Image (cartoon, rainbow, N blue to C red; front, side, top):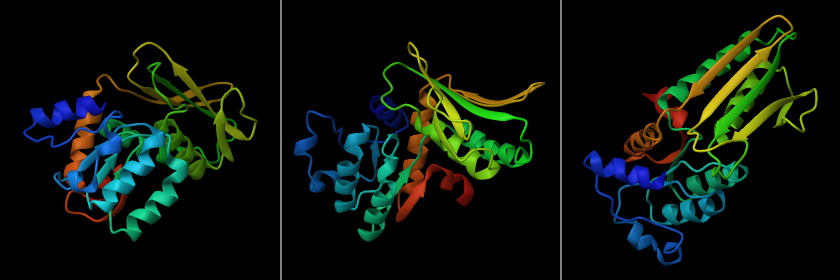
Length: 229
């Protein structure tokens, strides 16, 4: 994804000043980062914390598209605000998926009293995806739980209890990404689904986020771009 973001940036007239990889990460300094206007992080969950702290030190706005690090979200938010940094993160940079996030919240509110329906979530990704469930599936799950009250928490489908929302994670071939929210009763099924057909949509969304973040201070999520326009 990082390579695709760089390609998309160049094709749309932007300049890529620096590419940070695992092999050169230890040599990157805050002074080098200051050459750029914004950083985009598509790395791995274990690298996010050190990457964003270095960006804060350099006063470089950073867009984080990596998922799987949200247990450190409060720590990163506190550091961002304390160091007067700029960060925008998202579990999914697709415009369509962010519309689905809103629809999911609305649907969950409608289902609040429909206790005969059992909710579940399924996500499908390529076999190299590091985190499971996906960050997008977790966002859908947490929003569904908060809005509907039908379940108390989420869990992988093979470990979910009757009071938990099950999430099934499937890894197959080079699948770009598919997320399905299902409400099933004995007599009918409701499904809300999004399927990505190209990885380019994520790169385009990340670049839009970078342009939006440039010149701003604070801690944001991708959904803030939609609510603050």
